[in-house]
Image (cartoon, rainbow, N blue to C red):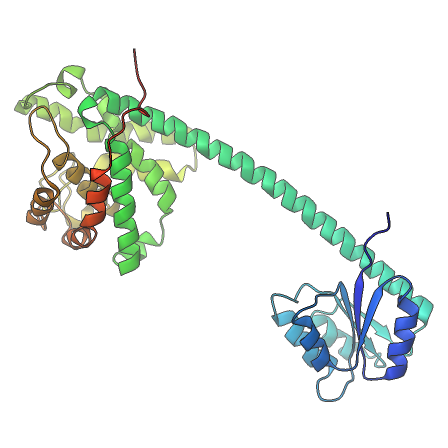
Length: 367
């Protein structure tokens, strides 16, 4: 089967050159002749050739002016352009190459030599396209493998987080909901331009992925405390408070064995700071105000809201309105004031997430 014929636009204000060029090339290519740069630009709006032969010396719009427009347009800048010219000085050739031409053919041209030069350049273009397709195919394979690895990584993280959640079985769905709350807050901050400098450095998807591990330190807490059906004693609460530091240390240990994993950096921050309070009365380090990483300040709101609207053996689930009032009351004490203002603006979205059916089927079951 014959290869698809390539298309050439031949642009020259001299009719003789157009005829000679067309006759020399038409057996091998579909050749369209144009007598000005203006006409070329017009036809390029709807038709893209495989090659342009462009005369340099034309009235009104010369070849140099024409190629500047062609190369500045994303739709046409990949089209190879060969200049046709009677000039043979070095400065003219250098100017043409600097503007994006791939070759010069001097006039008057030999039809046979013209055909051979075009054949050589067409072959080069075919090889470039084949290489580009090959590279694209390789990139698709790499992307597919990367996607698979990321999905596996996320599944492992999710499973690990659910193991912890299962032990603290009063909080079913807590991980998924806090992820969703965090996404709402991040989107709102980005939209409002609040803390924009810090947010610009973050990969939001990795932040959300890492949020699954914010309570991973609970894996070190005794079942007797985690599953206690009543209010904790001071000593028991003191043990629970250790989970933030346990979680940070656990993630730091994983980090030391796995270099350059950005999401683990986010996870370490979230695990270690989500119980700190704006006024410095939180734990584990008693950090204050902006000493607390922004990630921790964000997770504090998501975590507390979910705890408030969730039922526990020792408390009823509060209403959305009650939860809002408690968080507002904690403005400047428990929570970053700027983040509380953002929370209030998007609180309806929190309510929608909280009110969604709490399906336990996807949780891991241990017999």
